[in-house]
Length: 277
Picture (tube, rainbow, N blue to C red):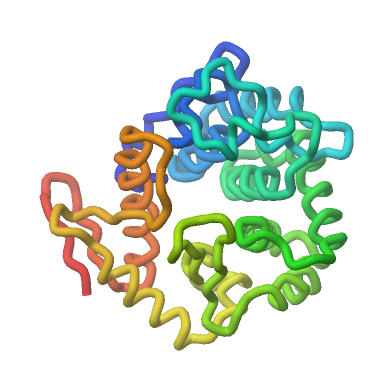
């Protein structure tokens, strides 16, 4: 989430400690949802070294909806389906989802690096164990987002979990040489690319891709900047509001990736433009 945000800003939680209300742009119902929790943890990561009590409250809420095997449901029942994508409205709340649990736990693990209360929370330990077991048990070629979010999760826990190296090797067999993970059921050209999977330099996930593949994807990211300064996504949103918000999300996610590779200069406060190499 945005590095340009004030370090004192945090998203507004629901009374139960979770998040909803469109924090996940294609899931606009007011109820707290696991996907919105993942985006909230992205903010809690970005406010480092500051911490927020809302992060622990969010762990408490996630613990309350965790299924017996330690996984999170893909989505909980919705009070309103307006503006929500079908994948959310048709989710089974009684079934654990590696895709959403890995996405959420990875973001929480990154926030936990500077927040001891999150790091020591029982929910995060249970979710972590669920993800490790589920990745190890994968047999059939997984859905593209399952591969991508599982790799992100393993990248987040690699420093403390010795089994990560073997699990990354297992997932590497599902990553094409060009790093392009085709999203079945998506738009004609929809795919996850290397920098959607391995966002951070000098981390184990980057080792799944050759230097040439990463360089080419950095070129693609840099070339994707629009005339208004922002970036777009290659999938269809469920609503006009969601499409607009995905552009903001794509922009604040892309800029730090390019900055870490010296491909863009993120402007300081008071400046109005960025320079892409």
